[in-house]
Length: 72
Image 1 (cartoon, rainbow, N blue to C red):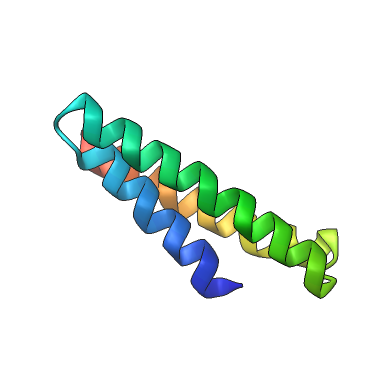
Image 2: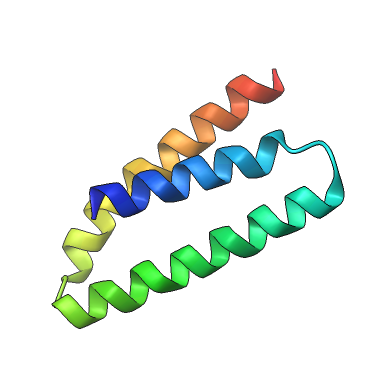
């Protein structure tokens, strides 16, 4: 699970650093697809909501910190 959320953070970071709209839209589409896949996989393997939240919140916080440092 940690690797999946790390991948989401990295794709989100790539989304923010693209210079053209095509690259941004492709990165956003990839980000959404990976997010759906992780949710599907978590349901299949029986991950509880508590465990999912335990990994999701730090991933979002890390992505926000990276976004702030990139744009400042």
